Amino acid sequence: MNKKTSNQRTVYMDYLRVIASFAVIIIHTVSFTWYTPDLQDFGWKVYCLATCMSRWGVPIFVMISGALFLSRNIPIKTLYSKYILRLISACLIWSAVFNFTGKGSFTAKFYSFLEGPFHMWFVPMIIGLYICTPLLKKITADDNTTDYFLILAFIFAFFIPSASLMIKDFGGGIINRAGAAVIDSVNKLKIHMVLGYTGYYVLGYVLNKRTLRKRTQLIIYALGVLGFAMTIYLTFAASRNENRLVENYFDNLTVNLLFSAAAVFVWFKSRKYKNKKLNALMKVLSKYSFGSYIVHMYVLNTLKANNFLSLFSDPISRIYITGITVFIISKIISGILNHISVAKKYIV
Image 1 (cartoon, rainbow, N blue to C red):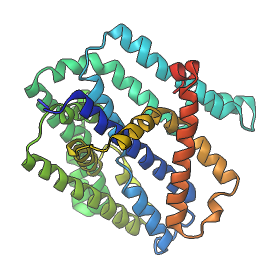
Image 2: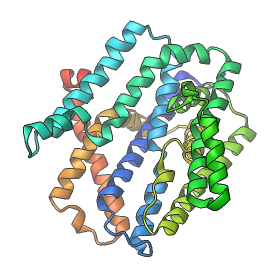
Image 3: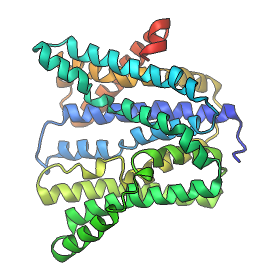
Protein backbone atom coordinates (compact mmCIF):
# COMPACT_ATOMS: atom_id res chain seq x y z
CA MET A 1 0.00 0.00 0.00
CA ASN A 2 1.04 3.58 -0.52
CA LYS A 3 2.60 4.94 2.68
CA LYS A 4 1.68 8.50 1.83
CA THR A 5 -1.29 10.01 3.57
CA SER A 6 -4.53 10.78 1.77
CA ASN A 7 -3.72 14.47 2.08
CA GLN A 8 -0.34 14.04 0.36
CA ARG A 9 -1.94 12.12 -2.48
CA THR A 10 -4.39 14.97 -2.91
CA VAL A 11 -1.53 17.45 -3.10
CA TYR A 12 0.24 15.69 -5.95
CA MET A 13 -3.06 15.28 -7.81
CA ASP A 14 -3.65 19.02 -7.48
CA TYR A 15 -0.33 19.67 -9.20
CA LEU A 16 -1.12 17.06 -11.85
CA ARG A 17 -4.51 18.60 -12.64
CA VAL A 18 -3.03 22.08 -13.01
CA ILE A 19 -0.11 21.05 -15.22
CA ALA A 20 -2.32 18.73 -17.31
CA SER A 21 -4.86 21.50 -17.90
CA PHE A 22 -2.02 23.74 -19.12
CA ALA A 23 -0.76 20.94 -21.40
CA VAL A 24 -4.21 20.61 -23.00
CA ILE A 25 -4.36 24.38 -23.52
CA ILE A 26 -0.96 24.29 -25.24
CA ILE A 27 -2.19 21.54 -27.59
CA HIS A 28 -5.20 23.62 -28.64
CA THR A 29 -3.16 26.83 -28.80
CA VAL A 30 -0.79 25.12 -31.23
CA SER A 31 -3.72 23.97 -33.37
CA PHE A 32 -4.96 27.57 -33.53
CA THR A 33 -1.59 29.16 -34.29
CA TRP A 34 0.01 26.67 -36.65
CA TYR A 35 0.40 28.89 -39.66
CA THR A 36 2.56 26.94 -42.12
CA PRO A 37 2.47 23.49 -43.72
CA ASP A 38 6.18 23.77 -44.63
CA LEU A 39 7.99 20.98 -42.80
CA GLN A 40 11.32 22.75 -43.24
CA ASP A 41 10.12 25.93 -41.57
CA PHE A 42 11.44 26.61 -38.06
CA GLY A 43 7.95 27.50 -36.88
CA TRP A 44 6.57 24.15 -38.05
CA LYS A 45 9.22 22.33 -36.01
CA VAL A 46 8.49 24.44 -32.91
CA TYR A 47 4.75 23.84 -33.17
CA CYS A 48 5.22 20.14 -33.75
CA LEU A 49 7.64 19.81 -30.82
CA ALA A 50 5.35 21.80 -28.50
CA THR A 51 2.35 19.60 -29.18
CA CYS A 52 4.41 16.39 -29.02
CA MET A 53 5.59 17.33 -25.53
CA SER A 54 2.05 18.13 -24.29
CA ARG A 55 -0.01 15.20 -25.48
CA TRP A 56 -0.02 13.43 -22.11
CA GLY A 57 -2.51 15.95 -20.65
CA VAL A 58 -5.78 14.08 -21.31
CA PRO A 59 -4.43 10.66 -20.21
CA ILE A 60 -3.36 12.25 -16.91
CA PHE A 61 -6.92 13.47 -16.28
CA VAL A 62 -8.24 9.95 -16.90
CA MET A 63 -5.63 8.46 -14.56
CA ILE A 64 -6.53 10.92 -11.80
CA SER A 65 -10.21 9.99 -12.17
CA GLY A 66 -9.35 6.30 -11.91
CA ALA A 67 -7.13 6.89 -8.87
CA LEU A 68 -9.96 8.66 -7.07
CA PHE A 69 -13.07 6.77 -8.13
CA LEU A 70 -11.66 3.25 -7.94
CA SER A 71 -10.31 3.98 -4.46
CA ARG A 72 -13.75 4.82 -3.04
CA ASN A 73 -16.94 2.92 -2.41
CA ILE A 74 -19.47 5.08 -4.23
CA PRO A 75 -23.04 3.74 -4.31
CA ILE A 76 -24.41 3.46 -7.84
CA LYS A 77 -27.23 5.89 -7.00
CA THR A 78 -24.68 8.50 -5.84
CA LEU A 79 -22.51 7.84 -8.87
CA TYR A 80 -25.38 8.79 -11.17
CA SER A 81 -27.08 11.50 -9.12
CA LYS A 82 -23.94 13.38 -8.07
CA TYR A 83 -21.27 12.77 -10.69
CA ILE A 84 -22.79 11.55 -13.97
CA LEU A 85 -25.75 13.95 -13.81
CA ARG A 86 -23.36 16.89 -13.31
CA LEU A 87 -21.30 15.91 -16.35
CA ILE A 88 -24.39 15.44 -18.53
CA SER A 89 -25.82 18.82 -17.51
CA ALA A 90 -22.45 20.51 -18.06
CA CYS A 91 -22.15 18.91 -21.49
CA LEU A 92 -25.64 20.00 -22.59
CA ILE A 93 -25.48 23.53 -21.16
CA TRP A 94 -22.03 24.32 -22.55
CA SER A 95 -22.88 22.81 -25.91
CA ALA A 96 -25.86 25.18 -26.05
CA VAL A 97 -23.66 28.14 -25.05
CA PHE A 98 -21.03 27.35 -27.67
CA ASN A 99 -23.46 26.64 -30.50
CA PHE A 100 -26.52 28.87 -30.10
CA THR A 101 -24.56 32.09 -29.51
CA GLY A 102 -22.89 32.14 -32.92
CA LYS A 103 -24.04 32.85 -36.45
CA GLY A 104 -25.78 30.38 -38.75
CA SER A 105 -29.13 28.70 -39.26
CA PHE A 106 -31.01 27.16 -36.36
CA THR A 107 -30.84 23.74 -38.03
CA ALA A 108 -27.06 23.88 -38.32
CA LYS A 109 -26.78 25.10 -34.73
CA PHE A 110 -29.05 22.33 -33.50
CA TYR A 111 -26.98 19.60 -35.16
CA SER A 112 -23.81 21.18 -33.80
CA PHE A 113 -25.44 21.27 -30.37
CA LEU A 114 -26.14 17.53 -30.56
CA GLU A 115 -22.56 16.83 -31.60
CA GLY A 116 -21.12 19.15 -28.94
CA PRO A 117 -17.94 21.27 -29.14
CA PHE A 118 -15.02 19.18 -30.40
CA HIS A 119 -12.94 19.60 -27.24
CA MET A 120 -15.77 18.25 -25.06
CA TRP A 121 -15.42 14.71 -26.44
CA PHE A 122 -13.63 14.12 -23.15
CA VAL A 123 -16.82 14.50 -21.09
CA PRO A 124 -18.88 11.62 -22.62
CA MET A 125 -15.77 9.43 -22.40
CA ILE A 126 -15.43 10.13 -18.66
CA ILE A 127 -19.17 9.48 -18.22
CA GLY A 128 -18.64 6.07 -19.83
CA LEU A 129 -15.82 5.29 -17.39
CA TYR A 130 -17.96 6.39 -14.44
CA ILE A 131 -20.74 4.08 -15.63
CA CYS A 132 -18.26 1.17 -15.69
CA THR A 133 -16.68 2.06 -12.31
CA PRO A 134 -18.68 -0.46 -10.21
CA LEU A 135 -17.58 -3.23 -12.59
CA LEU A 136 -13.96 -2.08 -12.68
CA LYS A 137 -13.89 -2.00 -8.89
CA LYS A 138 -14.54 -5.74 -8.90
CA ILE A 139 -11.41 -6.12 -11.04
CA THR A 140 -9.24 -3.84 -8.89
CA ALA A 141 -10.36 -5.61 -5.69
CA ASP A 142 -7.74 -8.28 -6.46
CA ASP A 143 -4.15 -7.33 -7.34
CA ASN A 144 -3.53 -10.33 -9.60
CA THR A 145 -6.72 -9.68 -11.56
CA THR A 146 -5.79 -6.01 -11.81
CA ASP A 147 -2.35 -6.84 -13.19
CA TYR A 148 -3.88 -9.28 -15.68
CA PHE A 149 -6.32 -6.60 -16.82
CA LEU A 150 -3.48 -4.09 -17.32
CA ILE A 151 -1.43 -6.62 -19.31
CA LEU A 152 -4.37 -7.26 -21.63
CA ALA A 153 -5.06 -3.52 -21.92
CA PHE A 154 -1.42 -2.86 -22.80
CA ILE A 155 -1.43 -5.51 -25.52
CA PHE A 156 -4.82 -4.86 -27.10
CA ALA A 157 -5.50 -1.16 -26.40
CA PHE A 158 -1.99 0.23 -26.80
CA PHE A 159 0.63 -2.10 -28.30
CA ILE A 160 -1.35 -3.55 -31.19
CA PRO A 161 -2.78 -0.17 -32.37
CA SER A 162 0.71 1.38 -32.10
CA ALA A 163 2.33 -1.49 -33.98
CA SER A 164 -0.36 -1.18 -36.63
CA LEU A 165 0.38 2.52 -37.08
CA MET A 166 4.14 2.00 -37.31
CA ILE A 167 3.79 -0.85 -39.80
CA LYS A 168 1.48 1.29 -41.93
CA ASP A 169 3.76 4.33 -41.79
CA PHE A 170 7.18 2.66 -42.03
CA GLY A 171 6.77 -1.00 -42.98
CA GLY A 172 6.27 -1.03 -46.71
CA GLY A 173 5.97 -4.02 -49.04
CA ILE A 174 5.89 -7.49 -47.52
CA ILE A 175 6.28 -6.25 -43.92
CA ASN A 176 3.27 -4.00 -44.32
CA ARG A 177 1.05 -6.75 -45.72
CA ALA A 178 2.21 -9.44 -43.28
CA GLY A 179 1.99 -7.14 -40.28
CA ALA A 180 -1.44 -5.91 -41.29
CA ALA A 181 -2.66 -9.49 -41.68
CA VAL A 182 -1.38 -10.52 -38.23
CA ILE A 183 -2.88 -7.45 -36.55
CA ASP A 184 -6.17 -7.99 -38.36
CA SER A 185 -6.27 -11.57 -37.08
CA VAL A 186 -5.59 -10.47 -33.50
CA ASN A 187 -8.26 -7.77 -33.75
CA LYS A 188 -10.81 -10.46 -34.56
CA LEU A 189 -10.58 -11.54 -30.93
CA LYS A 190 -12.77 -8.49 -30.16
CA ILE A 191 -11.57 -8.09 -26.57
CA HIS A 192 -13.54 -4.89 -26.08
CA MET A 193 -13.49 -5.16 -22.31
CA VAL A 194 -9.91 -3.92 -22.09
CA LEU A 195 -10.05 -1.39 -24.92
CA GLY A 196 -10.44 2.37 -24.84
CA TYR A 197 -9.49 4.47 -21.83
CA THR A 198 -10.14 1.80 -19.18
CA GLY A 199 -6.41 1.01 -19.21
CA TYR A 200 -5.53 4.56 -18.16
CA TYR A 201 -8.36 4.56 -15.60
CA VAL A 202 -7.15 1.37 -13.88
CA LEU A 203 -3.47 2.34 -14.24
CA GLY A 204 -4.11 5.59 -12.39
CA TYR A 205 -5.63 3.60 -9.53
CA VAL A 206 -2.67 1.20 -9.41
CA LEU A 207 0.04 3.87 -9.54
CA ASN A 208 -1.74 5.83 -6.83
CA LYS A 209 -2.32 2.83 -4.56
CA ARG A 210 0.98 1.00 -4.73
CA THR A 211 4.34 1.99 -3.32
CA LEU A 212 6.84 1.76 -6.16
CA ARG A 213 10.42 0.71 -5.55
CA LYS A 214 13.13 3.07 -6.72
CA ARG A 215 14.11 0.64 -9.47
CA THR A 216 10.52 0.47 -10.71
CA GLN A 217 10.31 4.27 -10.74
CA LEU A 218 13.53 4.49 -12.76
CA ILE A 219 12.17 1.98 -15.29
CA ILE A 220 8.95 4.03 -15.62
CA TYR A 221 11.00 7.23 -16.08
CA ALA A 222 13.16 5.54 -18.73
CA LEU A 223 10.02 4.40 -20.55
CA GLY A 224 8.68 7.95 -20.21
CA VAL A 225 11.75 9.38 -21.90
CA LEU A 226 11.39 6.72 -24.59
CA GLY A 227 7.71 7.67 -24.97
CA PHE A 228 8.47 11.37 -25.46
CA ALA A 229 11.27 10.50 -27.89
CA MET A 230 8.98 8.16 -29.84
CA THR A 231 6.25 10.80 -30.13
CA ILE A 232 8.71 13.33 -31.49
CA TYR A 233 10.69 11.02 -33.78
CA LEU A 234 7.74 9.07 -35.21
CA THR A 235 5.75 12.26 -35.85
CA PHE A 236 8.64 14.01 -37.58
CA ALA A 237 9.62 10.89 -39.56
CA ALA A 238 6.09 10.02 -40.69
CA SER A 239 5.40 13.66 -41.58
CA ARG A 240 8.60 13.82 -43.60
CA ASN A 241 7.62 10.65 -45.48
CA GLU A 242 4.16 12.03 -46.28
CA ASN A 243 5.34 15.65 -46.71
CA ARG A 244 2.50 16.75 -44.39
CA LEU A 245 1.69 16.66 -40.70
CA VAL A 246 0.94 13.07 -39.62
CA GLU A 247 -0.90 13.02 -36.31
CA ASN A 248 -1.03 9.25 -35.77
CA TYR A 249 1.28 9.36 -32.76
CA PHE A 250 -0.75 12.07 -31.03
CA ASP A 251 -3.46 9.51 -30.35
CA ASN A 252 -3.91 8.94 -26.62
CA LEU A 253 -4.15 5.18 -27.14
CA THR A 254 -0.57 4.72 -28.31
CA VAL A 255 2.35 3.17 -26.46
CA ASN A 256 4.37 6.37 -26.61
CA LEU A 257 1.70 8.43 -24.83
CA LEU A 258 1.04 5.65 -22.32
CA PHE A 259 4.72 5.65 -21.35
CA SER A 260 4.84 9.46 -21.19
CA ALA A 261 1.71 9.81 -19.07
CA ALA A 262 2.75 7.06 -16.63
CA ALA A 263 6.14 8.73 -16.11
CA VAL A 264 4.61 12.16 -15.51
CA PHE A 265 2.10 10.67 -13.03
CA VAL A 266 4.78 8.80 -11.06
CA TRP A 267 7.16 11.76 -11.06
CA PHE A 268 4.55 14.06 -9.49
CA LYS A 269 3.49 11.37 -7.05
CA SER A 270 7.05 10.85 -5.83
CA ARG A 271 7.78 14.55 -5.14
CA LYS A 272 7.70 16.10 -1.67
CA TYR A 273 5.45 19.16 -1.45
CA LYS A 274 6.74 21.27 1.43
CA ASN A 275 5.75 24.72 0.17
CA LYS A 276 2.40 25.22 1.92
CA LYS A 277 1.56 28.44 0.11
CA LEU A 278 2.20 26.90 -3.30
CA ASN A 279 0.24 23.81 -2.28
CA ALA A 280 -2.70 26.00 -1.26
CA LEU A 281 -2.57 27.82 -4.61
CA MET A 282 -2.46 24.54 -6.52
CA LYS A 283 -5.43 23.26 -4.53
CA VAL A 284 -7.49 26.27 -5.60
CA LEU A 285 -6.38 26.07 -9.25
CA SER A 286 -7.04 22.34 -9.23
CA LYS A 287 -10.65 22.90 -8.14
CA TYR A 288 -11.13 25.09 -11.22
CA SER A 289 -9.65 22.58 -13.70
CA PHE A 290 -12.90 21.17 -15.10
CA GLY A 291 -14.43 24.59 -15.65
CA SER A 292 -11.26 25.97 -17.23
CA TYR A 293 -11.05 22.93 -19.52
CA ILE A 294 -14.55 23.65 -20.80
CA VAL A 295 -14.20 27.43 -21.29
CA HIS A 296 -10.63 27.60 -22.59
CA MET A 297 -11.68 27.10 -26.21
CA TYR A 298 -14.11 30.01 -25.94
CA VAL A 299 -11.28 32.14 -24.53
CA LEU A 300 -8.90 31.04 -27.28
CA ASN A 301 -11.50 31.77 -29.96
CA THR A 302 -12.11 35.23 -28.49
CA LEU A 303 -8.40 36.07 -28.38
CA LYS A 304 -7.95 34.92 -31.96
CA ALA A 305 -10.99 36.94 -33.14
CA ASN A 306 -9.48 40.05 -31.52
CA ASN A 307 -6.10 39.52 -33.21
CA PHE A 308 -4.28 38.77 -29.94
CA LEU A 309 -2.24 36.05 -31.62
CA SER A 310 -0.92 38.45 -34.26
CA LEU A 311 0.95 40.36 -31.53
CA PHE A 312 3.66 37.69 -31.57
CA SER A 313 5.80 37.07 -34.63
CA ASP A 314 7.91 34.20 -33.33
CA PRO A 315 6.26 30.80 -32.77
CA ILE A 316 7.57 30.23 -29.23
CA SER A 317 6.04 33.44 -27.88
CA ARG A 318 2.87 32.89 -29.86
CA ILE A 319 2.38 29.44 -28.36
CA TYR A 320 3.40 29.97 -24.76
CA ILE A 321 2.36 33.57 -24.09
CA THR A 322 -1.01 32.82 -25.68
CA GLY A 323 -1.23 29.55 -23.75
CA ILE A 324 -0.44 31.24 -20.42
CA THR A 325 -2.96 34.00 -21.14
CA VAL A 326 -5.70 31.47 -21.98
CA PHE A 327 -4.81 29.48 -18.88
CA ILE A 328 -5.11 32.49 -16.56
CA ILE A 329 -8.35 33.84 -18.07
CA SER A 330 -9.92 30.36 -18.10
CA LYS A 331 -9.05 29.82 -14.43
CA ILE A 332 -10.55 33.19 -13.52
CA ILE A 333 -13.79 32.43 -15.36
CA SER A 334 -13.95 28.98 -13.78
CA GLY A 335 -13.24 30.50 -10.37
CA ILE A 336 -16.12 32.96 -10.75
CA LEU A 337 -18.49 30.19 -11.85
CA ASN A 338 -17.38 28.01 -8.94
CA HIS A 339 -18.53 30.72 -6.56
CA ILE A 340 -22.07 30.65 -8.03
CA SER A 341 -23.87 27.76 -6.33
CA VAL A 342 -26.03 26.67 -9.29
CA ALA A 343 -23.14 26.89 -11.75
CA LYS A 344 -20.84 24.99 -9.40
CA LYS A 345 -23.39 22.19 -9.06
CA TYR A 346 -24.33 21.76 -12.70
CA ILE A 347 -21.77 23.19 -15.13
CA VAL A 348 -18.28 23.33 -13.58
